Image 1 (tube, chains in turn orange, yellow):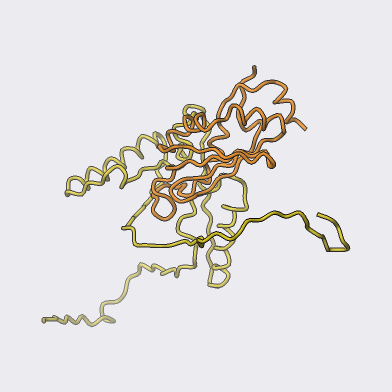
Image 2 (image 1 turned 90 degrees about the vertical axis):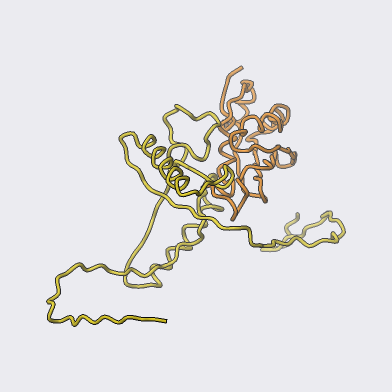
Length: 114
Length: 165
């Protein structure tokens, strides 16, 4: 099974929510969404983002939009106006998740090439 | 959704719930103080020198008795992997961020102020992953010109006034 970046089968957008950040992972095809729903668990994202988010991760699925939304519960160093970080709003966290390397089946990769 | 005519659609089958007993509010409160400063440090050995500079700042503060807890202090090396530190970019040779710094100047204050509102919208309507806009829209600040010169002493009459309470 080929190893590829998550960004080859999904795109992302993220932003702040209190002291945490929302990361929306948008699958590029139905097959990609089915694969991600099974493999891109809250635990996998928590492990990948551990250096940025010492807190927990919750996952919410929006099947009709092929979106998995991850809430990183403590990723902003206090959040918004209280944070000293350059990225006090978690705007870069989506692209950070997209840097994840995954073993992705060839047919899933092919399904995203339009 | 059905097209009823030119510039007119009918929406049906929309589901909703009863109103909740709460309003969504955004509240602000006093939450302490903060100060952030930055320096640009060139190579060779830019990263190492930046780390040394940061250590000097903390050491001098500690020497005067000012210690800051880990969650009350911050160091970032912008351009040398801040945004995605610790998630697998190390050693790739690719910077994980680039700081875009832009500015304008001139005699017309309104023209200078017109620049500010164009920068911040890139955070929400530009490409994903744009951040670091703390401080809000840049506003026109007055330039105080500096003119080092020589002045004939005869033109200046020294006068000393001593104030006492």
